[in-house]
Image 1 (cartoon, rainbow, N blue to C red):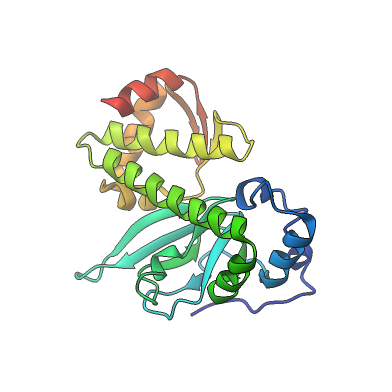
Image 2 (tube, rainbow, N blue to C red):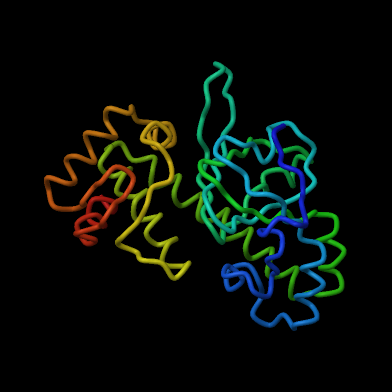
Length: 242
């Protein structure tokens, strides 16, 4: 497993929970300053993960859950045919690694799609602290529940047959996740490749490229490689809701 070692002297490791720009998504609003400090003591922040660095591999013993501070993490597994199957893309403010809780081993592998900063939260320490701070336990349960619910809703929507519907749904999902982070919901960047998008949606790379070109001709999007501008939100929603 390619996992950069924790380096407390790294600039990224100096960020605390209290001053992290993602804390509005990660922390319970009712948490007191001294409680934030106690949470901060158990969070491990290492060097940034560079593109194609693994955070963990499938089958490794489950020890921690993770939160993305910047960048993007892809989760995937290798199917029975030896092919990669993408199972999710995790953006800043989102948690991942919860697939290991029920099995005591990670079901998926997690890899950085670009330079990414993450917080590692040892689950045993989190459980201990949650006993002392009940609001923390409730909040992390709520975070995990939201992640699971969002994944289920997205998978249900992506089960539609039309390639246009699937891609519209994914773009709207990333748009709404941007909005949660107080970023633009219309100017979005896709950190994943067209191949990863196709793998995730069950489409060929050629189909993904054709749909993006079609959306651009229809005036739904302005596309410049990975930079996307949503020009017609209602049009995308109509496609997605079909």
